[in-house]
Image (cartoon, rainbow, N blue to C red; front, side, top):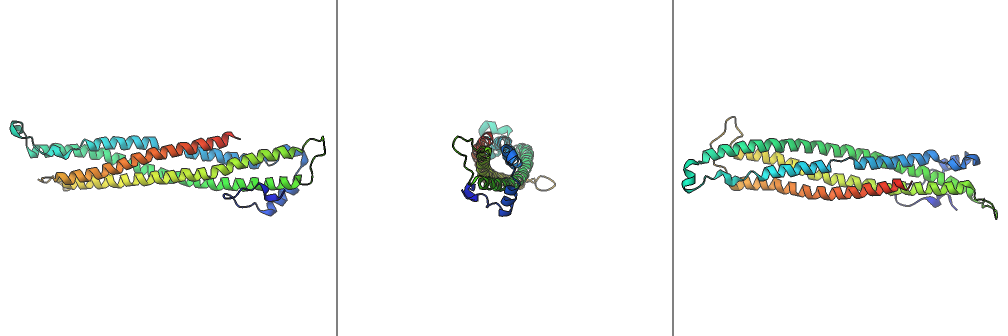
Length: 281
């Protein structure tokens, strides 16, 4: 069997031939049952780290905060600026309604600003998690290469040493099977790590859209309600403009809520498969 017989395509380059030679030359039959233990432990540790990084996320909290912001925005109805008609309107006025609506806007804007700050924190967290996942992906790939080097050396060692009839197999045979299983688990983790990163990128894009929309809504409504200057202006707000600006942010939030639900399902799938890879070991 050739040295590269245990190498799988698509995720890791072939091990360095000099490394394979060094492992082969240092092989000790007395330690065959613990052959490549440091390499095996390193691969398992990388899978554990990948699982921990994939589990670290803010999807549930982000969903809750955006849902709260949506509820607050829906409570701001521009039609409330119009005085009632008939007898009910005798004690009503545009000025009084505008004052009350401005106060409601200020309270809502404070809530949306707080959510916006949370969004910024989550986006930064996604960046840190992506960096951590990139590091563990590289380390997991290197662990696969190291296992490949040991497997190639084991295969070379066993070549031409088939047991005679009735003789027990060399203990390195069973050890090679163990290492091969570990190698397969590490290889299966590589695309899963990438999947977790891709889910985070989509999550960050959705949050960034909401953060930008929240800032635009706050400033545009502030201007439309005559609150941009040092003193409130006497204005007659354009109801259609207010509604359009609010609904644009609601659309962004709805898109994010849908995307977060999908990202949560995707990440759960990644976590489950990474856990399976770990449990196989």
